[in-house]
Length: 173
Image (cartoon, rainbow, N blue to C red; front, top):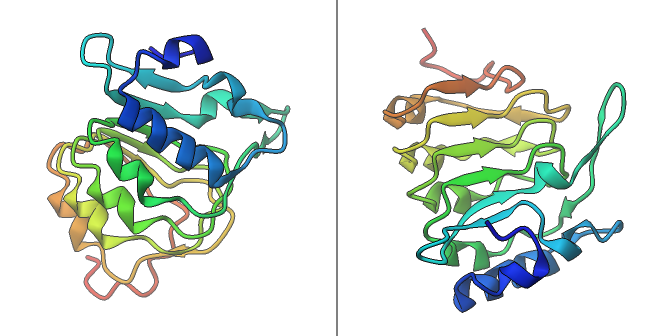
């Protein structure tokens, strides 16, 4: 795993550059990404497989203090074609980026305790290897107008959309 700046060098150059562009798109007032803690690279191939920003969040006794604000999650993340674990738990963002539905190898997507709002992207249904999808405890207004896409998640073992507004879903049975 690429846990420190020095070992990040072992990650593939194109993917390191994508991570740097992603880092530039974040508001990081506490400079928590300076060590690249939470980035995992495959020891053999050098591909980035894990981006876990929860590892960089601070907890208090009764809440998570957001450490990052995703001002514009850039398409540079699409360079991380081997990403299988994305955890943005407890961070801030606007809408869930449509590009998350392009990570074909993603097995774990955790956006809980974040401040995403708007419509849950239907293209998350493209993530057929996804085992965990957590959209829980979001204090903003996430909604879905249909959830047919969930049936495409054939590998899903854990789904939490407990805070997603499903009032507009017309085919919920």
